[in-house]
Image 1: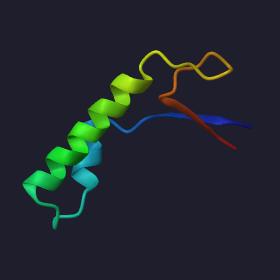
Image 2 (image 1 turned 180 degrees about the vertical axis):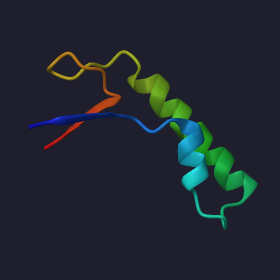
Image 3 (image 1 turned 120 degrees about the horizontal axis):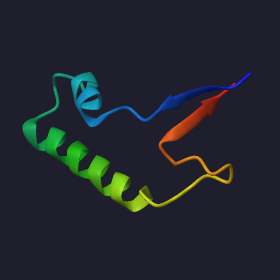
Image 4 (image 1 turned 135 degrees about the horizontal axis):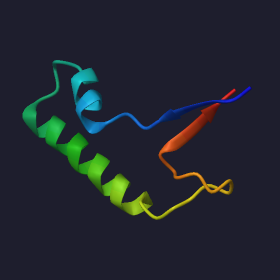
Length: 57
């Protein structure tokens, strides 16, 4: 049986970062997230699902 989860929203990801991350570190993570989101926006899996959907067995 497969379960489906979606990608972690940016806000939740930022909440999970270590407290030791600086403002610059957090901005870099935000920028990387947005670049990856844009780069994969139109991509589809072979099944037709968007790249934001992951399957776990």
